[in-house]
Length: 85
Image 1: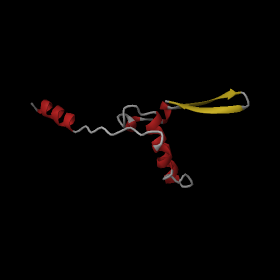
Image 2: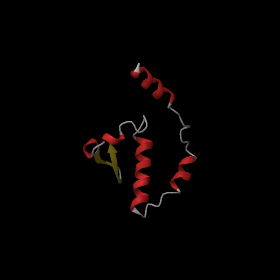
Image 3: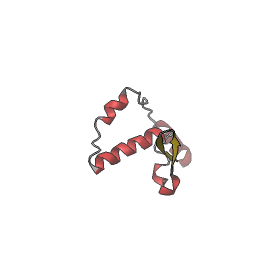
């Protein structure tokens, strides 16, 4: 009975939000001051959430530096940097 009630409470607590649209992104990025450490950290966190977290904050706490890899490749006259999860 306890597990059933826990499941019922969890099920009722989910509230979905509308996803961000492309016109919303410039408005959001206006608020980040990347000249400060806190502002840059906030911007990177939002970028991470937008591009890597398909299921919300589910596994965010368990991430480690070793979960990421970086690299470069040459595209004609410019060098492209990328990050993979």
